[in-house]
Length: 174
Image (cartoon, rainbow, N blue to C red; front, side):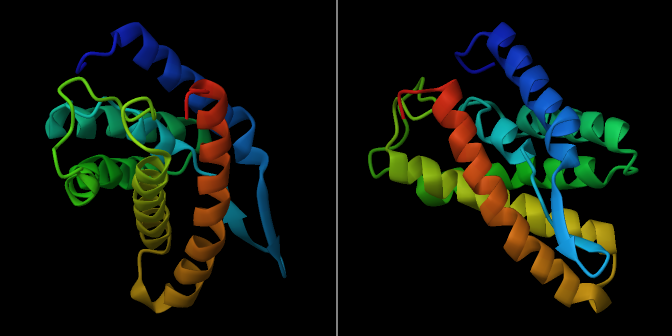
């Protein structure tokens, strides 16, 4: 798995899945009987996939995470779709943010090899992509663009903040 031992990735998968399903599933804020803000940790798992992981493998890992969340949420593939999109789009974010001298061969997205500003930008791209795609698939119609936009604007910053806090605990080097 790109220079990082598979056991660490499996443990990371299980920990983030556990937190998403058993803790952050309970977190939602809204008004007027509708929820507008949620916490998504899927982008964090996808962001932590080793940088040199081939795109098809990253997409498969992302899909497996998303379908696992869907299993517990009973959301019929919405998280799987968003995670798969995020896993695919990850390469575009990496290309946009690539340092002038390129990534080191064994560079890890955990902050050890890359700057804090790089890490925050990278994670922000993935969180934004995941949330917009998720709410678009959930609504499944452009007619609901106001709800999609509102939910995305409230969920993305909250999810990004929680992901940054989690990465500070998981990888205190940042």
